[in-house]
Image (cartoon, rainbow, N blue to C red; front, side, top):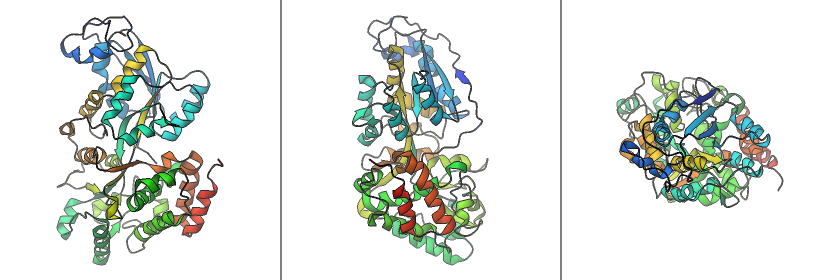
Length: 452
């Protein structure tokens, strides 16, 4: 599941306070700049979006303060120069409210959608408007697989906006150095290191926690996804997402056994917290804390986990905490990378809406967003990687933009909601909490799959 911590809920509309920094024209040209008065000074770079001054574009998403504050700063200059006001609203109930608004005739102009499955639901309403040609052309800066995630039944509807890196293992560089451990580069090395740490007697190799309120179980879906992709590659992963390969298939059963050997090994987990069953009751936010006290050595979690470390924790290769890329189980798979992201869908085709779509799909906007704050990454290959100042962001961006990587989106976000955000969470939680057998877990998930 693509889940990111949202802090300080502020569901009220946050309208940008804009100033007219540059000259502009009120003529409408669809963001093409043809009939708009020339922009001057620092605003020249926004000429392609000019001609819509005084217009307002509404945007709705799940992103809230403080992250939404940085989001609004990222387009502040664009708004000032073009005169297009972006009226933004973030809600903790986005997934349910967007459906209500769209079907009730109160759709926003733009919505930032965090799951391809939600995008598909929106497309079914018939209200999603296909993006302009420039937005589609901007997809050339992304790995082609991203365009498929913004498409429904082969038609492109929503441009990717952000990305997050799931394939990370968090650890303490200080603890590794003190113990003489090397960062593993392969799955075999990772398993050997896990056994070595367990044999030391003082530290368990792995922390784990899958508790997340009503979403309890989602971290376990990530573990399984990492192993499926890293064992069988992208083709089998895609077939699994579409249920051509079922959870009961031997390929997925093999992957589940690999997860069990790794995260259900009583000698390997859950240092500083409890036994294997404690993984089901430990929140994902708290799961990594024992690394700081050397009670456990490693935690598999996404790039956004950086926000969970206590204030003052130094994150970096020579710091208190850092991360390395989760290696492929099967070396022949190459460089598997799992992640998530968000997509911008439109419910209106007015020129000012298309101008904003074009800008938000550009490398220039992605670069602006990177400059505003750390903790945000794009898989847009046009972003200068030197702009990233945070070490985890640098690591994530390098993996997400690697043209040789086999990137795949979070599988549970691609599966039908009844499965990926329902039966799978429940069954994998029972797998850890009750020790249910793999065939039973797989059968429960397969039974929940909607009939075609």
